[in-house]
Image (cartoon, rainbow, N blue to C red):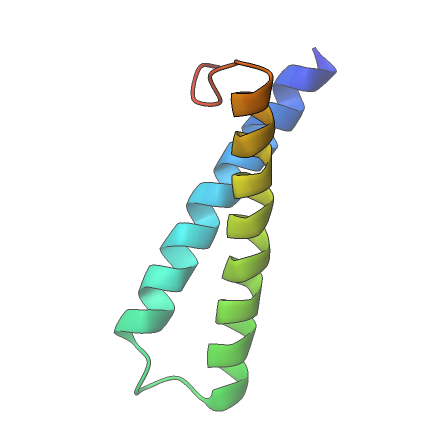
Length: 67
């Protein structure tokens, strides 16, 4: 059960990171430097965590998208 919740959290965080990066790229000119840096930093951390989890699933031969 705990593993299932962790899988949900990682994949939702990965999706939010991709969305945040996309929105910060679209609104790059209208955001302040702090907001732009915060959004890009947050998205980088969540995308990196999701990518590490996907690599771990690949090594264990599990499907990260199957919930």
